[in-house]
Image 1: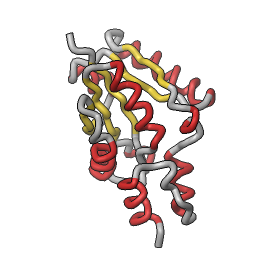
Image 2: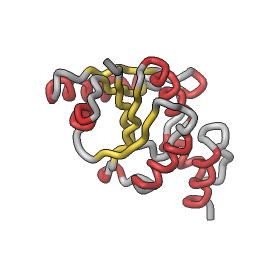
Image 3: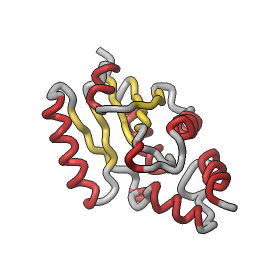
Length: 160
């Protein structure tokens, strides 16, 4: 049986923290589906197509990782790919309450799908897409936080 996992998120934009979680998950599972959420309610900076393209380029070095998008319940997306695990990244303790609530809700929606929490390397534990966008908007060098392709797209969108 192939061990499959889904790593969902908005990824607006993808950071080195996200890629660190993907690296860790790719070692544990035979197939990893990185699922970029449409997330219309969050008003993302980048379109879903742009976020999928940035993630696909950033994750190109992982042979067992497939990047796509989804709109709807993550448990439905996972079930549609025969994945039994949803991976969620935890940076700080402040993430835990929301993620725990979501995991319990997903369990009620589909008890066949488990949620696994992964922590990124400590070097990335403080990174958030929101902070990176704000820093980029103010002209900061964000190359330490995001892949080169993402940095370029941030500059195109935010630096005038």
